[in-house]
Image (cartoon, rainbow, N blue to C red; front, top):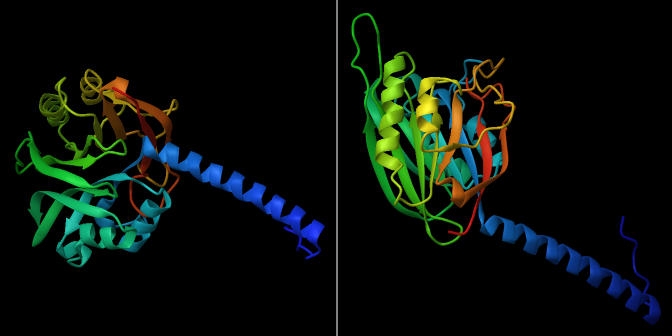
Length: 280
């Protein structure tokens, strides 16, 4: 605890000097934090299960709290409802934007129960461009229900003042061939050598050793922890199926990567990484 200063001249000077030193140390600490922030991005990937937690309750505010606690610059969301009956017609993308103070862009992939369902991006960085890219998928049959797949691609002004591309996507859950085709399409559309630095995040519905991830690794680097911590199901995770990738490898360094221990707000646990942008 700081002691009070008595106002005799010598003690006042000593106290002032002490406070000046503390102020300088605190200022230097802030400068260090700003310098770190100036060349890094905090990234979160979260399948929000259309707002429904593992307790069966729809609670967007609970999700917003989980997101805000990570202080993210970029958030990739999957399974986002907008005006859908099951989630009380809530515009979940806009509500999360309002609750976190982040800008939002929504990328619908299908109509559902009178509304739209798809992926979204939240960001605190200035948005330069937005694109929605459909991905290949197998149409539903009487025996097997599938869902259209896509990616929302948001280009922002990165912390270095240059364009940075961020992609949120969600691969097919029940057709292995679709997941492989979707991984190949991601490589085709977003992994050319001349493109801007890019971060890809999503629920790939595939484990690290499976073919879709191996296809992506031909062109991307996986920002995964050494234990490949599982992300689903949230209550007792058994499978790592949610990821953050980046490319080109030379433009990024992984400062931190982890799966957040959050078993209630969604049926997936969120994945977090701090990526440092390096010089070209």
